[in-house]
Image 1 (cartoon, one colour):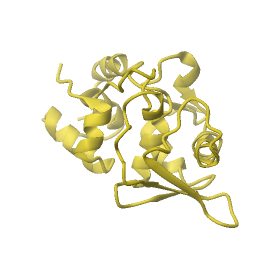
Image 2 (cartoon, rainbow, N blue to C red):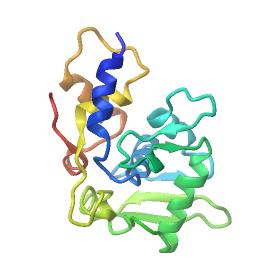
Image 3 (tube, rainbow, N blue to C red):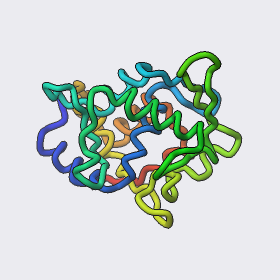
Image 4 (tube, rainbow, N blue to C red):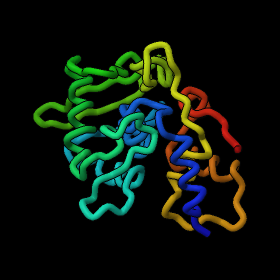
Length: 195
């Protein structure tokens, strides 16, 4: 059984505008394996597979769709987003030149010597700050990320065969495992939605 077009449409309606488009970078890092104890290396190409898993939708030009973006400008990202968005933004965070969001209060970013690779890890404050304000990937400084967990899980598993029947809880548990999500991260970014 696959996610039905009707269920996917409802999920996309619920996801739109629930977070800043910068959340795609954190989700990509999580897909790559970022945890409280595991760092990830960001290069020009290392985010590519994670981005595809999270946001590909079969476009002929390999562009990807960010379902939680709040404006048309941020819905689509190009196939080269691993380099042009993920690595570039991580570099700006490391250099303190970022505009729009700066999660370096809870993420540590170091440059590997001699190349353009960056190591991203959770610092001792992590995830304090995640999910709140612009630096936590919310739309505004006094706002919170409000991503419906089931809607995102339906989007995430849009192209996979699901058990028949499946429950919302089992799908969300699977999402937690696949994205290496701790309970504190879930509490910071997601809201429970069973409607």
